[in-house]
Length: 364
Image 1: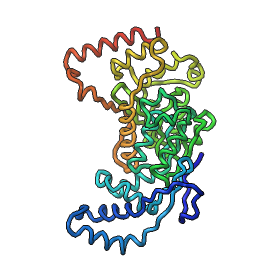
Image 2 (image 1 turned 90 degrees about the vertical axis):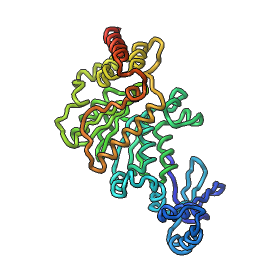
Image 3 (image 1 turned 180 degrees about the vertical axis):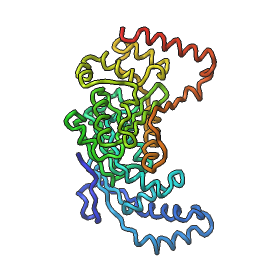
Image 4 (image 1 turned 45 degrees about the vertical axis):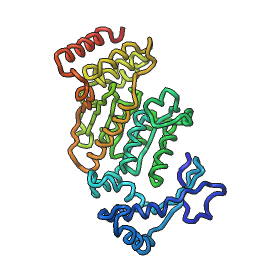
């Protein structure tokens, strides 16, 4: 796939390229981020800015970043200055040392539907410079309710499209793109050397096999699952405990059982065990009962996918900086916090009735 190209001189750029000059305005922003006592337009600011531009700013090199797929070149300050600017408003929610640890992490994301929101959020927060992205699938109109893409993206490979989106924000990113997806043959190559593996795949077979590989190489696994308007985050810290049961013990499955997953209903039954019907929202349970009847695929919405991206990036950062992030299941539940009557006896009874109906009818 195409990657950004770097040029030190305008004359080196391909003919006909649109040039966007962001260099001078970036240096001015740098002054204000390094001198927070000044605000634009306040007394003394113009004089101090002029002095900075005449002295300190002259030592900063510029670079033309050329994007072949856009036919545009952006004139920017060098990498370390650009990164300082791009993360300036992170301080001190993320402090300098934490930002460096987070940036130096290496992660892999398998599955670029919910995974695209994870990748975008990681990049947006100045997270791992080095990422591996995997997906064989192409963007369709039905994806546009939950991924950050437009009509012009339809038909493009998901992994390539979102790699390019990351490059447009972070041209110095180091990305490995598996645009043919993951298989039993390349799964271990994808996972080896990572600091965190992020599982957003549909394949039950690869979900299970990836955890065996991660146990072998002591690599933690994160998985975010949309749950109606909510998110379920699963954390499996194989870097801390290689004896930890896969999926935190919710599912036990053998190689033989994996090989016998033949039908969509087989997939749904195992997936339901992995997610856990008891935690799923009533509307999602009702929708699952309609799969293959009135509903074509497991429902997902953009707000939950965006929240999933935020939850996984938070967990990645916690692991990167050495904060506690124990294995287990984390239920990020907006309904509980914001839905009127959720915790009333009536609300609980309604959810219990929906769950009972699901368990009685699932698989019929």
